[in-house]
Image 1 (cartoon, helix red, strand yellow):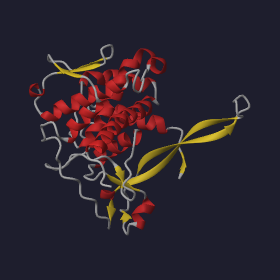
Image 2 (cartoon, rainbow, N blue to C red; image 1 turned 90 degrees about the vertical axis):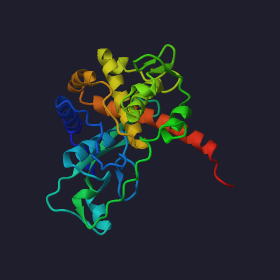
Image 3 (cartoon, rainbow, N blue to C red; image 1 turned 135 degrees about the vertical axis):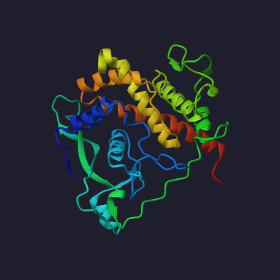
Image 4 (cartoon, rainbow, N blue to C red; image 1 turned 90 degrees about the horizontal axis):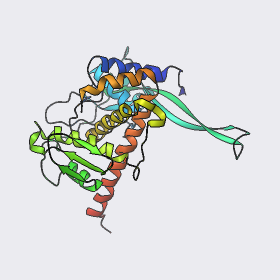
Length: 298
């Protein structure tokens, strides 16, 4: 465990910029998984705990670069504890952890203030290890399901969002608080329809009566690009949660994202945090509805 190097924000931002300049969004289909298997969320091999926010994006970048088939990561020590070892010469991948520290501040009402501190850790994919059996990835069972009782459909219904199918464009109308989508049959694949709707649903979470997401003060004239980046990442997190193969909503946004990231090395961290919050908001609604739908036996 050690404190974050001063260039962590810049390093991660540079990685994302490099991918975007190559015309690829690093959060789209991060794992090239075999047919019949689902895209899984990156998680810790030992605890099973899912990584969140910027760590998801960082590990997706690592998975793309390394060509890993597994979404499971662990530390050098955890590999030893599991009876295996990291292969000699393998390069680790960085994840970060935010922690608040209390420092003295005479100007604060209670004499102290909280300062966010970022710590950086090194993890390895299980594919980089010997003597450790990678957990089997779950069989894909979402993207091929078209009906009103799939996990995707239940998640959408539980949100309570007003969705209208009309025309040939997809967008969220803040004034009407309504999502407009083309009919599902107009999409080349049902997974494309799902990914686009999850993008618009992420926009929907930003309404003043929900998460009240407003980037005008933080990013000024680039607020629109920041919101679109949040919607892209939020949809990617939700697609991974549901096992849906995601896609880039609009390639035309890449240039505006590049301008945003090049002007602010913390923008991708902010966008990832807001996207995670949006995905959590939607997932929690679905889980609450599921609990009512299938209550635990007494």
